[in-house]
Length: 252
Image (cartoon, rainbow, N blue to C red; front, side, top):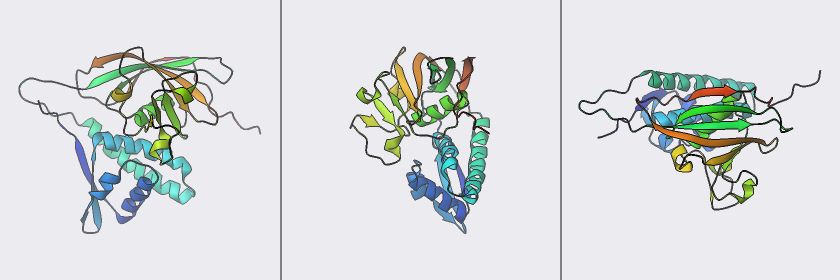
C-alpha cells in the first residue's frame, strides 16, 4: 500500500529566502529545497517534506544562539516562529484515511536516557518515545529539551560508552557542518535516522553533548513498537529525578 507523503509549500519574501540560503550555508540540510525554489512574482515558493521542516525548526532553534547581532537574532527568531507555526499546522492535520485495509508503517522507538552531574551524583533519567524516522539531530534536540538544556553545542552519538574515540559506530554534528571527521566510520546526524543507528533492544549509545563541558548521556533502546496511528510528535513517557544544571549561575 502506498504511503501518504506529507509536503507543504509556502511563499517567502526575498529577505526570508536570503536568510534561509544563509542558514543552508551554515549547515542546515536544505540545499535541495533551495535549489528547487520557484519564483512567483516577488515571492519565492519553497517546498518541504514534514520531516525536513521538523529538522529545519530544530536547526534554526540551535542557530539562534550563534547570530552575531541582536538584529540578526531577531530576524531569525521571526522566521523560525513562522516555520514552526507551519509545522504545527501540519501536525494538526490528520493523515487522510485510505479506503480498504488501514495500515500504519510508523514505528516508535522508546529510549531510557540518563545523565549525572559532573560529580557523578544526582542521576536523572527520561523515558522518551520518538518515531524511528526522526533524524539523530532531531532526537538530540528532544533529549536536551527533556533535561531543560539549551540546544547550543555540538554533539555526537557513540557506541563505546567509556572511550568514544574507539567507537565502531559514531555520528557527529561536526560532519554535517563541514568538518573533516577523525575516522571514515563517523557519519553525520542530520541524514541518519534513528532506525538506522539503533538496530535492537538493549543497544546503548553515549550521547556526548558539549565537548567542552562533556555532558555524558547514556541512551538505551528499550522497545520498538508499531504505531496505531500516524503521529510524529515525541513524548516524554517518564521523568525521574531533577536534571543537572547546565550552566551554573554567575556570581553577583
